Length: 304
Image (tube, rainbow, N blue to C red; front, top):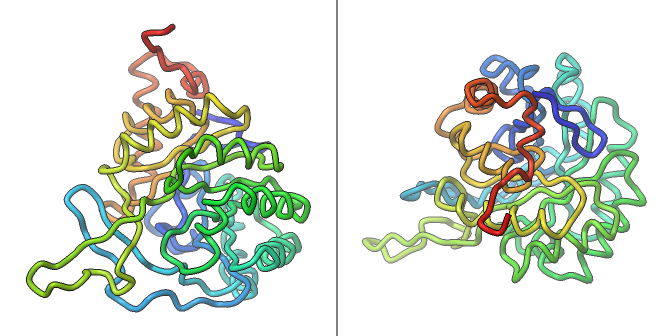
């Protein structure tokens, strides 16, 4: 069940997605953290962020909308109090999601995190649709993305993963730019920009008006994007978007992902990541798959 990802060794390809798993340690009494490949923390900024005013989560027919606004404790509090307890689970790779409003802020967060122990990699958040500056502003402009990734790569003492936005013309093109700028891997996709309206009150259901759509509704689109990206870049891809079952995870691997992230499923089932890790192993056994890594890019198409 082991896979290699940008120099990291994961006990299996299942990773808890950013924004859905706190800072990791909050789940230690719920999930056997040593039994998942890793986790991605909430987005960490230089200073604490309060996020948006509630309501900021809305259920949809096949998923959810969120506009949390990257609420977090800030890098100093994270390093001092949130990160150290994770040392109890050395097999679980801690990937820190990094956010800034400017290139300088991204770099400053990375440089501070370089001084801390217990971090496996950084995930550069260039794709959050729920903040009014930074985030998606970098991920949707090729020149800005190239410059940010290059600066972050120069500053980083650890593997750098770039989390890409689906709210672009070609996510595969943005992945290629990221790879050429020095990214060690890419993760895709982040949430899709969307909104929900209450017909009775004639008002948006989210205080932020728009938010990010996630869950099973986006899975077919996310799969297509992973498939297209795998044909454009040589660096590893972490796939995500509506993964609820082991079969869902297998589909992303076949499309070209080396590992997958599980997010919205954890809201419905806090033990989802551990359940999916066990389920993926069972699926491989029942289908005669000796190495889960052999599934990556193994999709058979009519052209083959």
